[in-house]
Image (tube, rainbow, N blue to C red; front, side, top):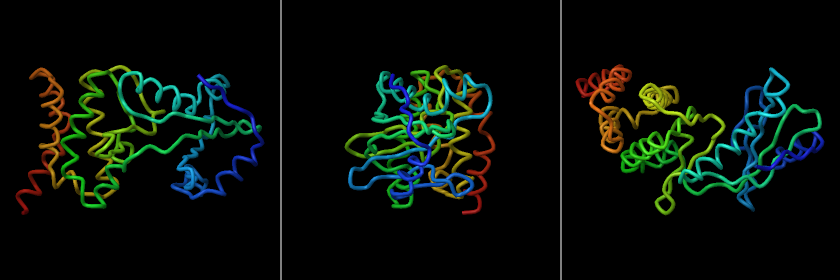
Length: 231
């Protein structure tokens, strides 16, 4: 696995400020930017507070790269880092990688072309879970999709590689809850119940496991019922 290259901290700021910004962190700090001519992503990672070992030897930036390599080894598309830089003040890392093809599920929803992708997404998440990939940040902004290449994963630092009923339920619950937080309604229109049926069709779980997951997600089914009744 690659190691970070030390560069002046000011150089990280200069690089990011010269690119097109995709999103900011709190405090108006650039989080992700893109060099459009080369279609290259630059992502900043603050080094975590806490123990010196975690801060310097197991930061989120390292997990980001390592987990992307691991999911690819398991047969799923993700990015290939081509650069890892650390500011000489040991405050921030910068990861550089070619942009992946496709659009996020949220972007597809804005384009009005998400409905046909949702059953594919449900089946894809079931396959991740089957391979024991627990994507803690698995919301609809972190799954990219294109008809040519299928699904790809970003924000891979928030992953674990053990799976059980509870983690399956929590992963789907997070996906559902994040769409509520973002105030988008495409999953409500498709219905959470239908999405879960698509997931179960691909997951090959026991009846008991399905009952457990349904119980964890029951509030979303109540929302489905309320919307159907209102219509």
